[in-house]
Image 1 (cartoon, rainbow, N blue to C red):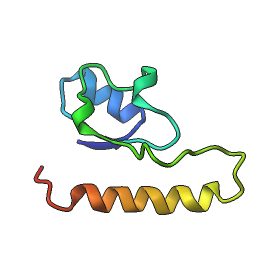
Image 2: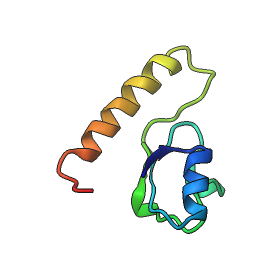
Image 3: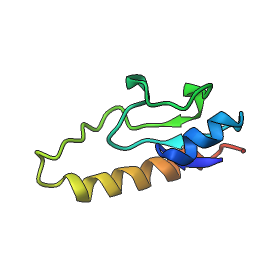
Length: 78
C-alpha cells in the first residue's frame, strides 16, 4: 500500500500490510511510523528543513515532495 503519514498507514499496519509511506512535516523517527513498518519503506527528504516560518514553505513543500516521489519510483519495483 502507498500512503502518506495518515490513519490509512496505521490501519494497514494493524493488518500486517506493508506500507510505502510518504512523509512531509512529521518524521518517522519521532514515533509516528506505523506499527511493524520498516524504515526501508519510508520516503522522506532529510535535506529540506520544513517550517511554517519560511515564506516559501507551501510552494517548496509541494515541489520537493513531487521530486522525491518521482525520484524514488524511478528504478524501484513494487
